[in-house]
Image (spheres, rainbow, N blue to C red):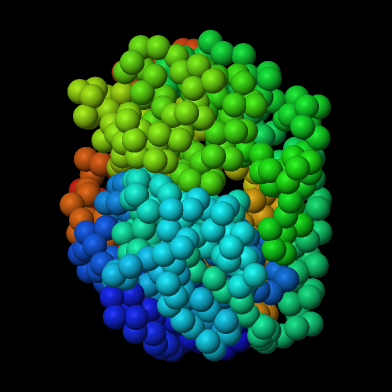
Length: 570
């Protein structure tokens, strides 16, 4: 089998033991890599506290990583979340994944806790745990600039050091392993950074077929209007105008719609900032944007949650807050959502001039920032208003009001990692009408759509490929290029079955942690409060949930049947 390096690096920080092992071929075939490989390893690690030395950090590439397969520059992290208590995975761009593969590894597993701050340096065969005392206390950009000569850099800022539960891990200073407080896990291990420099090559089984498949995918991406007229031109902020028109932008902590987002539209950003494109490794889309000084500009989710969600139309303030979040290593979605709960509970708007100050308090874990940094669920409960936290399973909702996109809302409720739009990414068919349009205002058929898209993107996260590529290409194209790289014959059905296997092992983990049917729901606000004549009927929702469980082969409590697990080889 080509594509995979068939070598995993395992590091125990408690005793600085470094070893390699070769994963079984059946593991790689059945879980592919990335999220799938991480899910299997985290599940087998058993029950642990998220911030204990026994919790694992699994950084995993996929078989396409390091090749020129379109949009294959992302890589994955799996762990137990200190924010949600669920199995958690996150993926991000940058150069770390390709560098890891070129150094000769499919994954790095980190466990234990160092007695003092350390960083891990990987340079092909050479792996060392080094003293990071001089780096401790620095934010992400400062750490990156010190270490960048050593290769690709993953690091935490001060928020991760302080175990803020909405902290992120930053890649090359600007790409984020966001959501779930994964930065706190790294901080709990006294691990400041990991650097990787690789000089090897990725073997491809059939290079001629690979080139044929790669060129075909690139043509599909170039021909897709959502990409060539949307993402490639405006970046993700092009979604602000679309979601505003659909009346699904979250306004005032998901309470209203009385807000003019025009100052936040992509065309206005272009007029005022003249953004420059920035692409991840092997990406023809180039959706990221930076200003002329090289400062990163915010993505759609950041704009939505730090803009309309707190009734803020000051784009400049959002830019500065986004930069500061990235420097401290803070998840902008969780921060913006939690600030929405804070604003509602305090019954006053947050002045744009105070936004950066609040971000700094969260990053430093000082004043009100100490409780805000615990996330919306914990903060709202501590203030005596649990109903004001817009979250699922402890993970704050992203920038789409589920009352106007019912399938996406249903996918929030059933997501294994909590309130997340990327688990099924029904943004594509319900909002952007890709790969085909489905009605966003009904629950009809949404049980099936949720299952199909959840399985699809579990596989996509295991390749590891950017979800945006699936606006133009699909399972057939990526099964073809995966087969060409590995020499293992994958059909589109094989990829979907792999995704279903991953989804079910994540479900088993969460069931073991005490999650169940009662957690597969949405905040009560969406059932009780209509907005623009839209609401979510609880009976329709529950009927769809029952249909979903049945389609998944789970019992009425959402527990996978023995027959289903046997079918999936779990």
